[in-house]
Image (cartoon, rainbow, N blue to C red; front, side, top):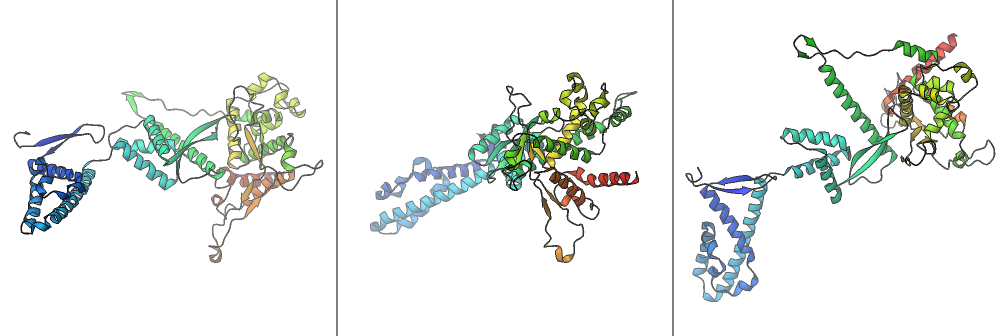
Length: 492
């Protein structure tokens, strides 16, 4: 076929794959002519003394029709002129040829850019930089999922190693920054996990507010991923695999007897009430630590300096749990296990460290650990108890001696904005913020009372317009629960 129609083909490697470009005889001659004109770049000023313009052109260049036409035009223009001006004409002709060469070179480069498609690596680089320019930061798992979906449409497959090499290359060029952020596990308060975040090069220091945005984005991504997987499982539950045989549907295991046993031991069902009791216990535990006076600058017994020397205090969560009274544990964490002489132990005020190890492991099982971790997660979103930045898992140090969490001593609450504002306050309305210094037990009680009062008007105000309602959905339930408890107490 190539010989029959006088076609020419050349091999190209645009994207790590050999491809062939087929030319017709006319287009191929024009393509070669444009390539041949690039040889005029070698012209130097030393050739200005040549008396004949044809000596500047090689024999190969004379064979191209386009170069012959351009040079013949120059020769006809110089034919009727005096010999004295021949050298000057040669110089002008050389400059004209150089200008034509530059124009052909630019046109050839533009033609090559149009014809040659972008490689997959370059396209991936552009997509990543566009995403970072738009959002300033993106999770690595989000980026991998997004790129994988886009490249799957093009019939390509991208693995995690390819994305890692791409990000390392961009980081070496200074186009992005890759960092690791720690987040507490929702189901295990004693451990944390690391996830990768890709930052734009314009992002400077990472502030605590930005770290909270990283964790929120990670929680939302996990929730969406699990919700999508659960929807797929639910959609495929009624599919028939074999004629006459149905796949058994997953049945929820509801254990009313277990809940009745937990409530019989004193368990409180309201989640925010349990979070409040847990926070008060942790504050009392941190208050008894030796470094408490260093934070507040104690001068005399019972006196505290108004100014805080520190904004938070480090402590070990596992050591604090062992100092928790058994009665309080059954109220905020709950357990369906029955321990010998439980009522006697609760009356004596025994802590978890004072009961036998076997019974301690029974009441603090996997389910109890999960309920406790969810309370820690709520306090973390309220910015009352957070994961310590200095926390590093070390096999040589006991868990009781490691500071795993920090108690925030300067929390704040923002009042939610009303749903309907007067026209005069639409532009000038500011959020009302309450700042606290948790130096005494009365201030801790004042914090929770203020939180309840601010969100009692949740029907007239938007709870999502202020902190902590925007970060903790459960905080909207605290007012209803507190109001119900007050009504019950009043009736009794």
